[in-house]
Image (tube, rainbow, N blue to C red; front, side, top):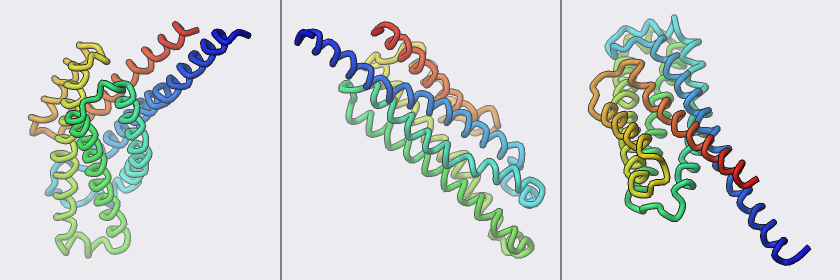
Length: 228
């Protein structure tokens, strides 16, 4: 085997190796959409939207909410992988300012989601120990209000900032198609300006992550087939 053949073989091997991580991470983005979306649906169907309700869901829907909360840690892990593949796709074109906003808002979204889930889990555990004390003390009212605000106001505002910063990076670097960047802006503005906490609106973000992940996965498979 000649030296030239060895170099070509090495280049192909390295190229294939670099494509493995984005492919796995794109699948993780789809996994996040399924897990997070499923968790949101379970919570929305089990917990009344009114933060001032009396807490009947703690008894009637405790099992469904517990299942929803158990899905969130795995959804968070998958979301971190999704963020990784997005940064990997940008590569050396990464803008430090926009990437800082993109990375920070993604982590804040994840942190606030976990805080809201922890509050819900704490309410369930406290109710199981002493139902009357939790409701009568007024602690439940506070926990429910904070949980509602963190999840529906702050977390999804951070999700919209995450989308806007990423869409701007895509427009500048052209690593993603313009139609996807445009769709990202539209959905992000809807999340940012909306005062509604409806089920369909909260599913916008996981649906967008799924769309981006599917596009990256398909484009990655195309590149792999071209190399072969």
